[in-house]
Length: 306
Image (tube, rainbow, N blue to C red):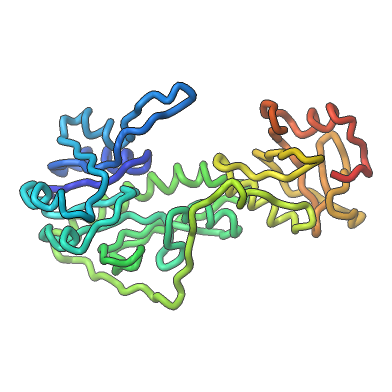
């Protein structure tokens, strides 16, 4: 198929590579503008742009599509279909209907669950046992279009949102390559979403990443997994943020109170229910270290309260 691809981050680049490998004609790529990256703020092209340029594909980086400034260019490209993967710009109604087969979007959840910008993270934060990807026919709503294909994926009990995103990316690219021939042949039936069962997956913030030991151990464990590798879960101790990059569920046989140190090697802390082992922490102003090393530096002992 002749495809106009719209996408920006790593998942977009992976899907674009898969479409090239599948033999599709990518007539152009739309992506967000280059941004300063790193401490030196080096102007860097989005991953999707880098892939497109490697394949000699024209790249367009408008600020917006909503003002109609790109309508004529998109029409002249004459794509059979527009494929959208984490583009970051809203497609107005007139663009949605331009291609022969309209516009499809890869969304990394099992719609209508987790509409919005952070579905992978929220599936881990909420302790879900499974997630997946959905290919939908785009309409003017936020992830509300008819679903063309879904693929499910189990979530590991220790899996972080970062690790899960890598697996979701791979299955999403596979789903895109499978659905396009079905669309072209007319052998796929779109399914309406049950909008009454929809839930949202809002963008994460640093403030959301805070947890308290009064919360259940399961919640804290999910919060640490779901907030990794950004913004990273944290708790406060003596006015400073202590980030937790990795933890495990642990036993609290004596039902010790929340925040009590149950052991220091490894560092195990009681919670509202259960306990967690703090495996890797990042004290404010310091580098990542083992939880037990952090405890030793503070001379924490069993029975202390964090």
